Image (tube, rainbow, N blue to C red):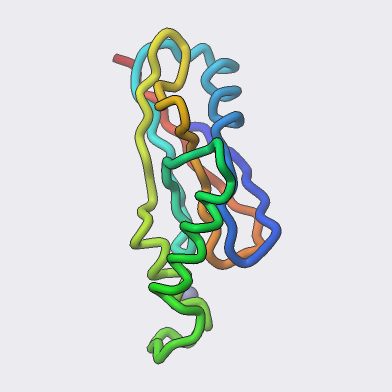
Length: 131
Ligand code: ZN
């Protein structure tokens, strides 16, 4: 298993990690198989969505904030209950097919790390299985 380090700079943000993943695929000589991109944090997540227009990321965050506001009548006393809920809604992992040494993504797709309780230094686990 390999890992990426993802520093985040605000409480809530979506960080494009596609280039880091492409670099990892290339540097490790991964050719044919599947890569699992896994977030080992309870207040962050991984998603795949449009990488071309950054407004899409902004809309996703704004909508998540409407659905799960920072302040509500939460039982969790740490003050980051919204981040835990957002993490579960978005999900902790994604899988991407690798063919001919390249990530197979749609033209407009990118892989994103979603920070919901930053800023922090985060890790993303990456496991390649050939096949
Ligand atoms: Zn918490």
